[in-house]
Length: 55
Image (cartoon, rainbow, N blue to C red; front, side):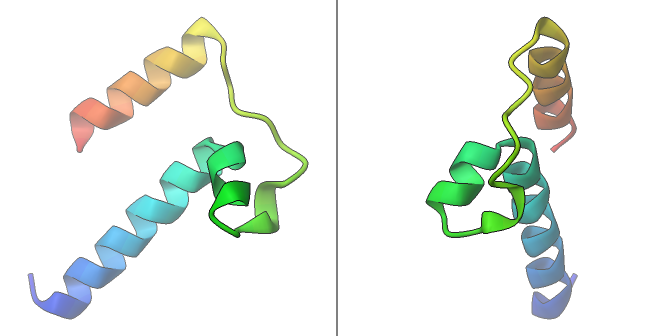
């Protein structure tokens, strides 16, 4: 994987993480998700854990 591929992958992962955590996205200056709240249900936590294990 060259640097450009790495940068694309890192950027995609970052934006996906911020999409799942709209409060952090707003704090980071990305206002696309200002009207959203994170999924704090048991299912939401399980999904976050599953994604973390994949990466």
